[in-house]
Amino acid sequence: MAPIPGRPAASPRPGCRSRGVPGRELVAPTVVAILGALAYLAFPDDLAFFTRIIVAALFVMSLDLVVGYCGVATLGHAVLYGAGAYAAGILCVDGLTDPLLLIAAGSVAGVVAGLVTALVILRAHGLPQLVLSIAVVQLAYEAANKARDITGGSDGLSGISPGPVFGLFEFDLWGRTAYVLALVLLIATLVVLRRVVRSPFGLLCRGIKQDPDRIRAIGGTIYGNLVKMYALSGAVAGLAGGLTAVTTGVVGLDSVSFEWSAEALVMLVLGGAGTLYGALVGAVVFTGFEHYVAAVDPYHWLFVVGALLIGVVLALPAGLGSLAAWLRRLLPQGAP
Amino acid sequence: MTAALEVQSLCRSFDGIVVADNISLSLAAGDRVALIGPNGAGKTTFVNLVTGTLKPDAGRILLAGVDVTAVSDVERVRRGLVRTFQITRLFPDMTVHEHLMLALLQRAEKTGRLFASLDSFKDAGAEADDLIAQLGLAPVADVKVRALAYGHQRLVEIAIAVALKPKVLLLDEPAAGIPHDEVLRIIEALERLPADLAILMIEHDMDLVFRFAERVIVLAAGKIVCQGTPEEVGRDPAVRAVYLGSYASRDRDALGPGPTVGRGRA
Image 1 (cartoon, helix red, strand yellow):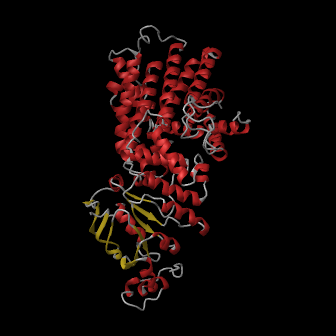
Image 2: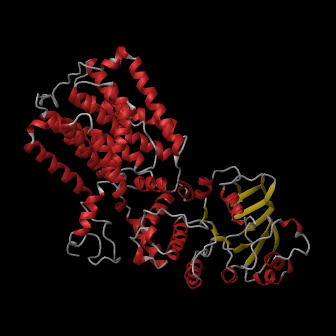
Image 3: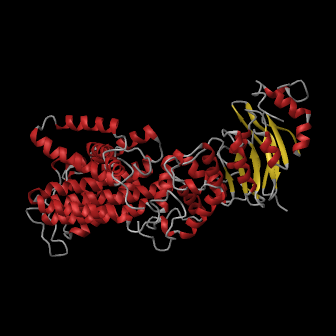
């Protein structure tokens, strides 16, 4: 390790490894950028599938903010995602065609949906909270179903045809523009969220998750800070929803469904909660299984996912993402 | 001079069982007071009433002369009333340094900052390192507290309280559960606390009480039965009666089932 500017070369604290190392927070986004570029070059025919993975990854990261970092129990997170997807889709059908504006609108809709959800479900804790979150997603689902004049109901919302990105890059048949746009948004989101979880606010939220009463005893409030995290989570989920509307051109009722919420939770548990990159790993593994195993055996692929989930929860309670940390410990440490 | 903490006629009962019976006491800045009493005397209930996690049935609590009886527990902390916990209440997945950063940033009302890196708060970082060094925790500064020895965890509890720069500190059995030879480290830590801080310590360990406190208040069945210097209290027959389980003397018939006896070394 090179001497760190602004600190004495010899660390005054033995055992201090992670604090104050500049550039550390850019490692994960760089890895994602490299993998993303490799995927683009190696599998040019699968870009639509990779875009779907990125959308799932954004959504699961958004869920990680409230579940993994704040300890909120929710099976209704698709409300935030669906709000973004419908907002972008409806605005596009109504004539707003700039894809970035549409995605931004989706993000704003996600914030609003996040605030509304937070006001309801943060009133309870544990099991009642989980049930409230299911109630919220079912209500949203029915509302979207009934409002078929604007949402298309069970037929889905179609006719979403956004213009070119920056007026230059048309959405092409191979999904290249869509993929690059999604990858850039993923990397940007990852940079921002890693910053947030390492901020004073992120530290406070970790404390709230572990012992809210202790946070009160140092003078911190709970409710307002959780609502704030929910709004941020809504911004990311809404961004994912807006991205899917823009890149696929359709929004279905499944985007506000209980099933989609539950799948996101499965992905988060698979990959590991409370790390952000676990959300990425979970989204890649789950969506990959869905894509490849379901192609081989469309009737039993969930069986395989179920077995994998049981295996992960029992053998790697911190998720597949913890494999990386485990491997890193096996490797020889870098020079001190 | 206004008292740092003043408790006036505090009463509280649960289902008809009185756990705080007309308790009044007053702490000035710099006071070192111990609250002792057998198990079940209502000591922790009293702390919860003062900090605001429990609401009293009657009575008033004043901080620096201001009535805070109706003020929330969080707001009382912000006004300088801080407690530690009898059973360590720390965040298992945070390092010692992170605990202190959290407390320091909360005191500075900076925990709402979303996009600032923790490392950019150099003053707080340096203050955290100072506190860690003062309490001899430097070797474990970057260890998650779940991996710490209990004695170290107790020191972290004290460090968090100090980081909040309280005016009144309620120490709920700071030496509970640690081996006797490590109590010395707790005592050293307590003796280094700021001189103008008003401290109310709840404690079973009589060595610690006698060493630390200038004034001792004895609580039994929710009632103050005696107070004075440690020596006066040690001589008081009422206190002996409470601790030795003899209820033959005056005022003892309301005690109900006997407290755990024989732990006191008074």
